[in-house]
Image: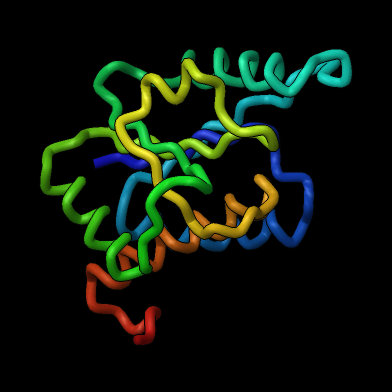
Amino acid sequence: MNITLILIGKTDTDYLKTGVDIYLNRLKHYVNFNTIVIPDIKKKKNLSFEQQKKEEGNLILKNIKKEDFIILLDEKAKQYTSEKFSDFINKKMISGIKNLVFIIGGPYGFSNEVYNVANQKIALSEMTFSHQMVRLIFIEQVYRAFTILNNEPYHHK
């Protein structure tokens, strides 16, 4: 199984870039994990929030395939503990899914078109995080999930 993370905008804060790179490097030992960075919308100050979501949504849709299993990171969705998230990942792996695609939206969320193609939504927390920080938090949780699945000492109960 491949895991792809689609992101809006590049990470521009050094400590976040460093953290993301650390966990991406660690993940190489467990899974083929790719990121797709969709560029920020140009001239977005002239657009409403809905117009921005629609434009971002169009760019997201161009980067997914029909056979992908799409999961949106959405603060209003179901939350998992780290152990349950690792079980979720394991079930997706044994189900035969070839490409599991997680999507982190821009600062205003997702367009209706993106919601319509999603197979599932999950939340990291009821709290709101910047879409820049969510990258690091999410990638670390994927790494944690694989260490749990492999009975490695990274995660402590």
